[in-house]
Image 1 (cartoon, rainbow, N blue to C red):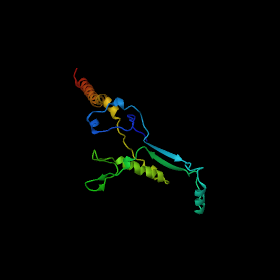
Image 2 (tube, rainbow, N blue to C red):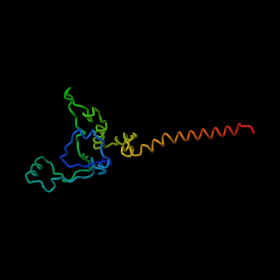
Image 3 (cartoon, rainbow, N blue to C red):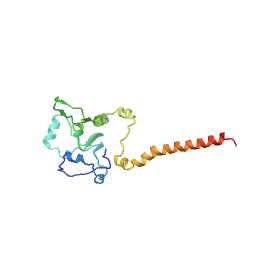
Length: 185
C-alpha cells in the first residue's frame, strides 16, 4: 500500500502547529512520489536466532521435547509504517474509548481504518477464501484533487456547455426540417 503521488518527506524533528492550516498548501512542494506505507510479506522466514542457539537454550528445548525451528512454514506478515491509525482514543468527557478511526480534531470517523485492520487480519487468517468472496464489491476511488483542480474548467465546459450546444443544434435542425417539410411552395 502506498501514499498518493503527492507526498512530501520531512526529517524529524519537525515543528508542527495549526498555523499551517490557515494557508493553502503549495502543490509544488508535494512531489516526492508514492511512499510505501504498508507491505505484505509472504513466504518462508528464517529465524533471527538461526546459528545462535546457545547450548543451555538447546538443553532447555530438549527437556521440553521441543526442537528449534530454523525456518517457518509458509506464512504471511504485514508491516505498517505507522500504527497510530489503529489507536482507540479515550474520550475524556465520558471516559470511554472512541471507535477506531476517530479523528478528534475533525470530530469525524474514518471507517476505512477499521476496514483495513479487519481485512488485514482476515487475509492473514483466511484459509477458506472468505475474503475473496467478500471482495466482489465495487468501491469508488477518490479523485486526484490536484488534477481535478487543474482541469476543473475543462470538465465544466464539457459537462455543461457541450450538452447545451448539442441541444441547441438539435433544436435548430428539427426546426429547419419542420419548416422545409410543411412549407408550401
